[in-house]
Length: 448
Image (cartoon, rainbow, N blue to C red):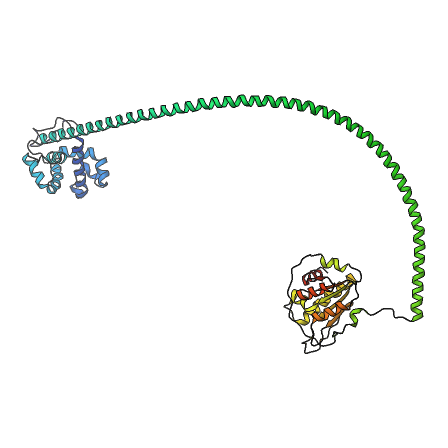
């Protein structure tokens, strides 16, 4: 709105000397914007129809100047805007028409109604509202100024306190810094003193080291000279030793020839005695005289023994290298340890097949013993070459038969018992036969 709003109608004699207060103008425009949205399109003043589609807040903001101008010159539109306000506040509207608004009434509402209704003296009511708003603004500004002054005074006091505390802190830091500088100077003096002493010691040590190095060089030269002499002596000694070895080899060759002739004579004599006495070409082994059920006799399976841990993976390999070694195998103990899920016949076949290959490789005497006390049908077994197969007699076990085989061997012969049964292993150890766990044999057969 422009300054000096002029009314066109019976109130033309009354007009404002200054523009409406901003709060009053906003209230008038807001009321008109509300009415425009509620009126039918053909009842909205023509200049404002393009704003009727806007949202109310947007309409009051964008069309405020146009609405204010239309209110100023269109009395009918102004009265229509005043209607809803008067209906909403009938007592206040009546008091404004009479020119006696309540003292406690909101000056902005009184001024809005006075501007729209235009009763006699309406400009006085608008100016009174303006004065009241200005007093309120002045009072608010004064209170705000007082609050700001109080805040500034508090900030100044706080700043003074903070500055005093900062000064005290800086003074304390300065004292600490001076103390630290003094301490650093003292340490620097001590460090310089120690460095000087260390330099002196280093110089003395360098001098002594140089002397020792010179002495070491002299000693090295003497040692090199002595080493050359010793190498010369060594060469002469090696030459003498080589000559002695050649002479020894020549003498040993003569002795070897004589020894070979003697052995050939003894062998020929032994063969002659064998032919003269008609002795057989081979002799029975001790295990052949132990009574046991052969592979063509009935036998039964026994319960599997306990598996032991492998103490030494190379134990069995070392034992099999002994000359004329006799390997006694607790048959079912080994098969139940390695492949107990197979039928007994398949277990025996698999084990004996592996033992046949082991006997061919090591040329050891191999005897495999099975429990046969409870077998109710004959067992036909084709024993591999080099493997003796025995079943325990009725009323005895394979463990007992193994014990008999161990005791039948002459003292001093190498006998190895393969079983995971602790009792069998302990009995074999007491009889002087080293035991080996079943797992070692199974591993050895797996490599074959």
